[in-house]
Length: 423
Image (cartoon, rainbow, N blue to C red):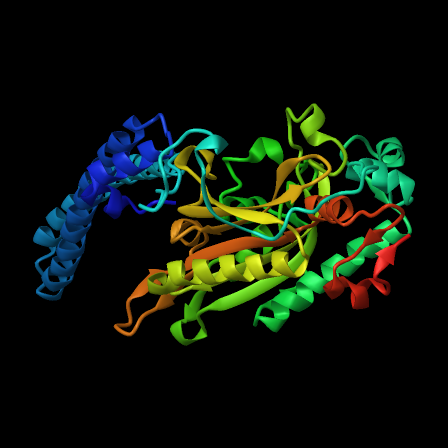
């Protein structure tokens, strides 16, 4: 959530940066300033009236002590009138503050100056590429055929049990999933991230805090009886660990990692781009989250990008890193880097990770703060990234490492999987 004071002091800048995100309702900025002006006016009126009440109450005590009862009674009537005037002011103030809050949360985060202008994924900037695209055998097939050939995943049974987008992993397919999860967690904890195993459902306050509500309400599964949301990513429960907390400056950065299943309705997803593991309603992901000092958040963002890049390199997958344009960024992000791996059998790039800096946007909603050297309380900056999302990683591993009659796994997975190949 943006800070009202910052908006008031930087109106033109705010509108300019929101336009980079292709945000259409720029009039909301002026509406927010108008509501805040009215709020300040009412607050000042309330404070002045309350000051009169306080001063008169003190004077009444002095008059009573002097036995000047008649004057004291006059003052009491004045106090009663002022108190009566306070009530409608308080009601108006409450209404204005509610309207201000409801309008403020409609504004997305401001994009960093590093964010390129653009409206679609085609406008994203390729920062760099790595790895080598493999030369596949003549009988190479996409991962959904490999999954059937080696009895790794049954999409039809998953559809029978639940529905489309809920695959059933079998035998070595399930084992490979487990191996990848364990490897990703070990890789993250070796880099200083503390592992958590969070709940898979969150309440409304948690979903609001990280920006899923109201922006992505239609994309989340909702448990109506209990008013809980199934998590779309571990980012939501993990970041909320520190909601409403004031952390010590010396404790920053706070580095957290977690594995969870993720649940997304993905409404409107149809066609060849969602075949197999390309887009699921339930999938596994290991996440990394950091809460950091505002002065260091972009340095940390670069570190997190490097962290994910080295993880992809260890999996021996061809990849590329993109800096997202304004039109392709999330509601909450100030700057995002996407990682894509090349699916050789499908001949397309598949997104497997996003690493984002949210600056203070989430922290303002979550009220995660720290006290600086001057004992001033200010919000932390939050960052998160996929490290990694499994479905498309698994798809690319199967496709890119397929041989005539086997799938050769990268060396880092041998100890986790218990073998170097699937035959």
